[in-house]
Image (cartoon, rainbow, N blue to C red):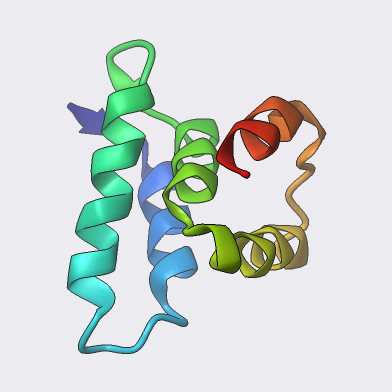
Length: 86
């Protein structure tokens, strides 16, 4: 599966706050969730946002949403994903 550069960059930004020792494992989990939801031939920024939300455990989801909003990402198109992930 091919990844768009914007998608790669966003995923790297999103995992930066995770402690270094846990980052590879967390990134692998998030990538797995992202790849399950990809529609098409390439992973897009929207796929990363959806996967990141879905991969965030219940108590961490609020933190994930704050991080996405801090990056000026409009979560309106992802309301259904936010509801599913709760």
